[in-house]
Length: 147
Image 1 (cartoon, one colour):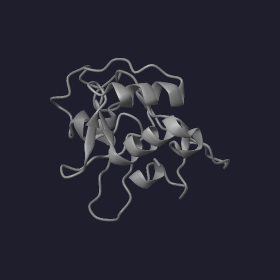
Image 2 (cartoon, one colour):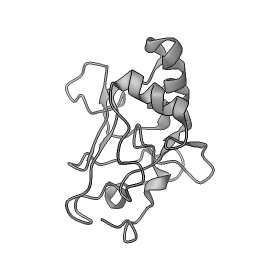
Image 3 (cartoon, helix red, strand yellow):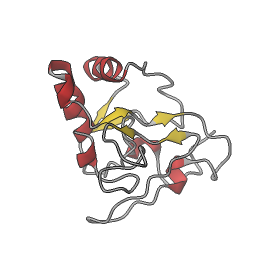
């Protein structure tokens, strides 16, 4: 799948939580940061794969970078979710494309981040009826959910 037809570039989303990273937002390239990649693999028990694919974000938001860095020293300081966003190649475009279906709002309004077969939402540690929902009960939330 080519992302040329997508509304937004994968490079504007976090590999770990899927949150939108604004142009001014600090981001870290997980493909070139061994320390960050090892922290991710150690915390979640998952290998970082498929980097470089057009449908895969390579960046990590500031909140996830801080939480993963802290998790190396103390696991309880890691992200508030036990499973990161799981990415796979979309089957159809735009119906299964996270980057086309995500609704990004300006200011303090909450973004809508879809839970799709090609992009499964994070799963939070908190026990509530919808384990993919953030602390506010809505999917997505803000980057404060990461750390």
